[in-house]
Length: 399
RNA sequence: GGUGAGAUACUCAAGUGGCCAACGAGGGCAGACUGUAAAUCUGCUGGUUUUUACCUUCGAAGGUUCGAAUCCUUCUCUCACCA
Image 1 (tube, rainbow, N blue to C red):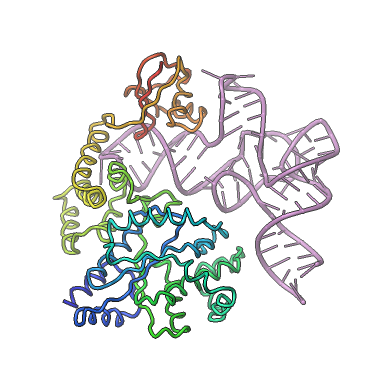
Image 2: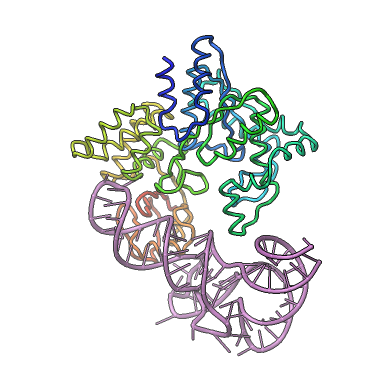
C-alpha cells in the first residue's frame, strides 16, 4: 500500500528532498489516519492556469488521495515584488477587490483537479502584514547576501551587471516564511523554484517550529514551441479554460517529440502503456497523429467533458483535414462598399491595412475559399467569408 | 559623492551628419512541402488606398544645421570602478 502510493507520487517528479519525511507522513496516515499539509504557492496576478500548472496540481491531488491537506497559497503580498526573474520590477499592489476576484477565478479552475474538501485557500498577506517592520527585519537576519547570491538567476544577473533591487531579495525570504506561518509538511513547486523551496526548510529551522518541510519539484512543462517553459507571457500555453476547439488544436500542433513529454506529465495512462504506444509508433503500426489525437481527447475531456471533446475532434477534422469552414466564426456587419484591406482590419483579422496588403500580396487572404490577389478590391453589398492564413476566419455582411 | 561607459523596433544587436523606416540574428506572420507536426526552402515583419510617395519612430525635452538615430545642452534611467 505504502509502496504503491510512493511509486505513484514519484512518477514524473524531477527531484525530492527529504524522501524519508514523506515516507513517514504516508506511514502515519496509513497507520493512524493522520493528515498532513501540502503547500504550493501561486501568483495572484495571473489567475489563468495552464497545463504547466496542472502538472503540479495533478500531483497535489494525488496527495489528497493519501491524507494530504492542500494549502493553496495565493501570494497576494509577494506578488507585489514579483519573483525575481530579472524582467519585472516591483509591481503595483493589487487592490483587495482584484485579489478576491482572482482568487475566485483560481478556485473555479483549481477545483477541476483538486478536491475542495481537502483544500485550504490562503492569502499570504494575512500573516506577512502582521510581521510589521521589526518582524521583517528579523526575517532578513536569517540569511546572508552571499548565500542569496547563490541563487542562479541572482548570480547571473549580478555577474552580468544587471540590476537587482533589494526588494527582490525579500521574495525568497517571504515565500519561505509562508512555510513557517502555515507549518507545511511538504512544499511543491517547479524545478525553477528550488531555491525558494529550500528557503522554507531553512526558515522553519531558524524559527524552530519543530519540523522541516520535504520538497517535491516537478519538471517544467515545455510550451507549444517545445523549447521554452509554458508561460502566459510567452504565449506558448494551453489554458485550462481554453475553448475545447482551441485546446484540441493546440495539443495537435505540438511536435511528435514533445507529445511524449506531455504523455508522461499530463496523461493518466501508466508508464507501461505509454511505452507500448511509443513502441507501436516507432514500428509504424500506429500513425503518430492518431496518438496525438488520443492525447488531445484525453486532456480536453478532463476540462470540458466527453461530449465537448468529441465535438472538438469533429470540428478539427472538418476544418483542417477536409478544409472546410469552421462552424462558429465571428460575424461582422459593415456599411456600403468597402475596401478589402479595411474590411480585414474591421473584422479583426489584421492589425493594420498595411499588414493586410502584405498578406494579400503573399496569397494569404481568401474570400469564400478563393485566394485573392487584388489589393484594391472593393467589397459590394452581400455576404462573404473572409480568411487570413489557415486559422483566421470571419463572416462579413456588407450592407 | 567622484570617474568612466551606456540607453536603437517584440528581444539581442549594427549604424556615429544626408545613400536610414534604420544591416544582421532570434522570434513572429504568411507561402511551398506535410499529419494545421517537426525539419527544410521562400517572402514579409512602424503606419497611411498619393505605396519608386507621404507621416511617425532610435531613453526624454530643448538647441545647432538646408538636413540629426548620429553634433551640443539639460534631464531620467542603467552598469563598472573608487568612496
